[in-house]
Length: 149
Image (cartoon, rainbow, N blue to C red; front, side, top):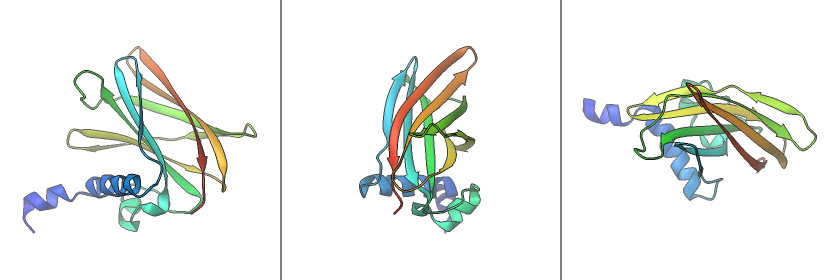
């Protein structure tokens, strides 16, 4: 395999490919909200869709009871990936709150913020994600029901 092809098949590329496959096979599709000057793309998917190698590389525990929260932030006009601070919580319908710890992953011009959230079958979460860069702070909120597969 040439060095160029090795660069193309980085673990992040494999992760992103897995996420695209999940979207096309009926898993929870990526969504987007424009907040301030940013397009914030987000999705929550079950971790067993990740290969063991990719999960290991990024410290993600594969379990039918774990979901991966994937956030990317782009400048609305230039569509350039933004280096931001991302934090948040996932609150279930009983009011139990889980703090999300995001890990930044960079691959070329792409930047992704990943966090794992444990869940029970058919548990619904209200996600509240804070995105901050300098004095600009935006709050992304969305609700999602999780299923054990």
